[in-house]
Image 1 (cartoon, rainbow, N blue to C red):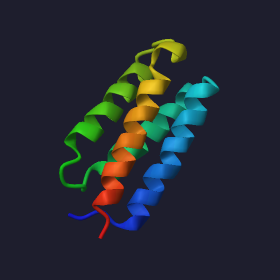
Image 2: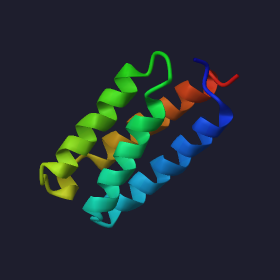
Image 3: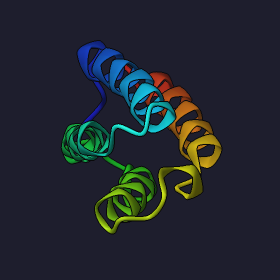
Image 4: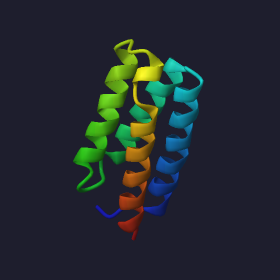
Length: 91
């Protein structure tokens, strides 16, 4: 499936939400956001690596890792990279 612009927009908003959640130590919110991102990526073709990155972040959040060790920079960098890749596939 090619990606609709609505999905791209939602992923961008959720990436911003993840950034805020990680920066403010809002563990529950960050967990919900990563779950939403994984769900949004489910129907997108060739998004396995993207989903895997967010599943890893979600596992660290739910596993009780200190929020400062979850790798906000890595999560955001991956998110930006993924958002660009998804945008390129927009119909």
